[in-house]
Image 1 (cartoon, rainbow, N blue to C red):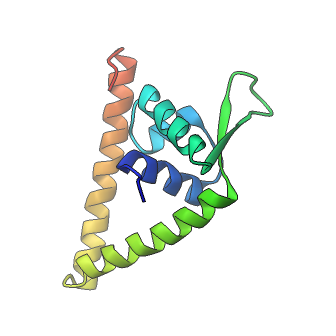
Image 2 (cartoon, rainbow, N blue to C red):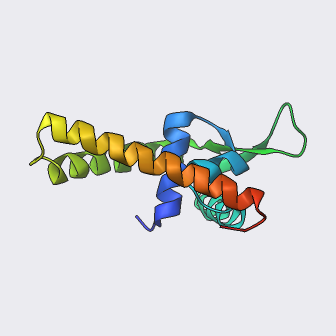
Length: 124
């Protein structure tokens, strides 16, 4: 579909979390603010997302899925979920549960590391 991983991640996050400030969206998918802006620019040009002003913060821009973006990511995510289910079909329930826990721990660790780098003034 011509989407890179960060574009898919942004669309997926907006599908499951709802509209988000662009900077928050970048934190959710663990990419830098510059990369997030570039991703939103690409998705906006394709008519998949739109930026709207925040009702509470004049400086913030909120990313929203468009109807076209919602239709695309719902279809792509369903395909992705099916592919992941097939890829992990050989694992039993306990193994899937353990893997989910490990992946969650990795995601939380990545968020912590990203926050520490940002606090130290190092761009990820």
